Length: 418
Image (cartoon, rainbow, N blue to C red; front, side, top):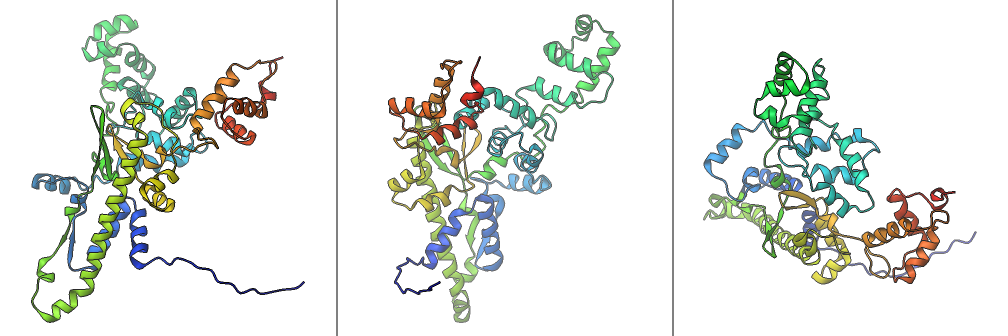
């Protein structure tokens, strides 16, 4: 064996201290950013930082008192549920579980349109599959979360009851919710062919249920997680930044001093503050630019409740004059608020095929072709690829197989009808 050594020159661009610091701060999600600012507050005598103020656009004295009194309620419903996702195992894909958790309202209910939203973001799953995922997630604590309405919430809780009236209670909730609300117990008794005493016992049990299982958790969790909100007004969209940087204040007794020794002492701390403030401003501008770009490209989703368009990190980077890795850092672990729900930024980026078609379009075409195929002579992945190529959609056979498997569609040999 002959070993040889070659010398060569390789030019590498070295990041400055400021650039490296910016990239670190950019990647932080809101919680990590607050932790960093709190650490800086502990180490830098020139600044004050209030975590509660940072989470709000404006804070009154009364709200401050309320926060102190309710300090024991720290955990958000989303955090509580995310800690339980391990038990779901392989029954619910991680991205679907996360999406559904952030689709809950503050009472723990899942909006009726959430299923359609899941299908828009993850078209590889059918409505039936999404329904199954929701059923699994309804086993999470607190009992009653992921219900679509009050009846379903109450039934979920009653199913865990050990009362001898359990079945009767479920029937009352399912079939006579309005009569129950109107307290027409004799009418329920007649319809259920039960004694009034039995119905009264059932009503006692039902009235002990929790109609708002998510309400005991932090009410402002949504805005604590999001740094950006997208507002829809008529046919226009507005991007609003939610962080309140008034929470970060300089302490004038230190930096406005005339004492020479003190002036010398604060110099390095002032330098750190200037770098921090410049970096935070750059971070805000970067996030604002990226989210604004997303609203332009995905306006069909925001304005017309339509499907997401093909859109990549590379496109944003080129349009904003940034590096693709910078865009990737900026959207990492970050979400936007839209219509009172939290949506991770990564979900707005849809991969493309060679000729620019989105994954959504390809999967939709695969489903259409398979649905209309001759069941005795089903289309192979190669044949699907060839047919789509004739339509101007260039997709490799292996990609067809991958998308088909993700949608839960069997291969041609197993679809054949004899």
